[in-house]
Image 1 (spheres, rainbow, N blue to C red):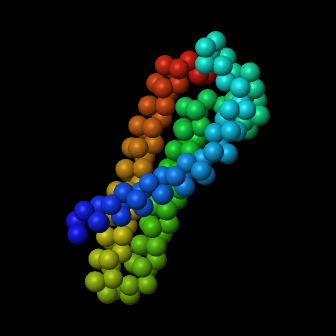
Image 2 (image 1 turned 180 degrees about the vertical axis):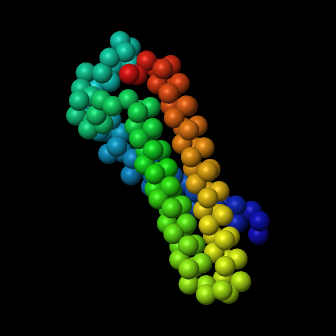
Length: 134
């Protein structure tokens, strides 16, 4: 029984790998038309890739920057939400405690976001200085 299960698994695995290989043929053909010359270190026709000329360090920095800004906005919205709950608690100690917990969590989250933003700036500054990106 165990042998037949392993045969079925390997048969299905082989079929899926063959399907993935067939799906990757157009990608490989397109890469072959880029005319990359591995021996002379040059690329003769890479202008049609659509990738642009921006350095990957700069692109990664911009992506992380946008992500951290969205997280900062969410943290600020959570603070406003906690304040709203506190405002409408009407003296209910349970609701006030819940609002304080939300605000406390939002402030801690904002501090973590600011620390990661500073760390990100520091890391990408040194990455760009190492790779000589201005």
